[in-house]
Length: 65
Image 1 (cartoon, helix red, strand yellow):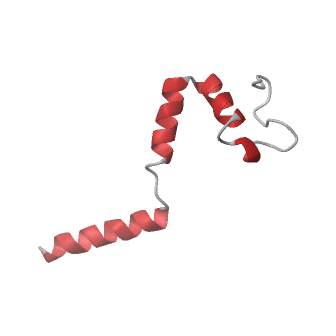
Image 2: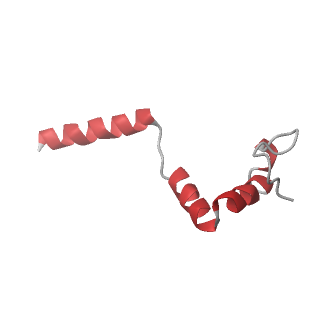
């Protein structure tokens, strides 16, 4: 059953049920389309340090050409 009042879940929290109850809660909260967009975005993000290193590498390669 989806908890419609609280986003905190039960006493254990959502940590133990990320792929079941929490996913169902978020789909109910956001709708399937917005949930799918959120999942897609979460899979495309990278840490800031890696993004900076990638940019530095790209700029170094461009300046060598």
